[in-house]
Length: 335
Image 1: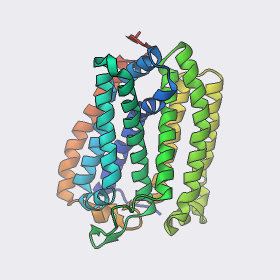
Image 2 (image 1 turned 60 degrees about the vertical axis):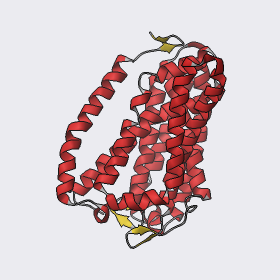
Image 3 (image 1 turned 90 degrees about the vertical axis):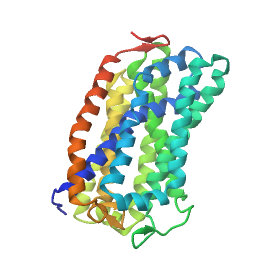
């Protein structure tokens, strides 16, 4: 089905871009926190922390842009989705706050560093798990009556949402491991490479499980993924996932440093594409389309002018910060 490109579609892609940018840039950051128990206390954990220290605090910019953009451009969707997902969203925010505090205090309170490391891991796992649960709950469907959420407090808690939550934790851990392969050397890099190989298998299994379950959540998902002639197009996505997973495994085995991280990002991009195939043009799957949820055209134009100015600025300073802090890192910083 073809869709005309208008302001509403443009805003949908702006928000999708912001969400994907957050996943990419904060994913490896959360992944390092998830992997912390697998790293030895001392230089290994300090090196892992140093690898993200210059950039981690700006990664949530994209989360704010995505959430703020949803509120401004699609207020009806915001009003429906937020009440349905209050619990996982609050858990995510608390996890992000807690891990941010732990990140700072582990350096300034060395006497209790072990406790702050546990807090850093806990906050990372809770934030990643909550994000996945929220996504799973959105995919499985939200009860809507009129223009309001009509479900209960615990509707988000289902086996499918927990599966998606656990899958995202594993995938973020893979992203964190490949980031360490790219940014570290010596024994830590070897340890990260071994972890990345195991996590590649786990991530592919998680993607397969979620992908197998999704078409049976709603009839429209089944039609888009498995009915003819849609299957001729949609089948290319799992094929590309399989090829990317094989390439990731090969580059890890053959000693690649940058390629594993880039291919892992490719897996996330393909998964995000699969999500788009499932739900577009809905913003609340099966209930509310982007056009039904959209703000007035004058509001969209006004906000688009601001986004056209701010998004390039954010991209420039983000690219500059990553460029300045490129290269390898050890327990004492970048070199």
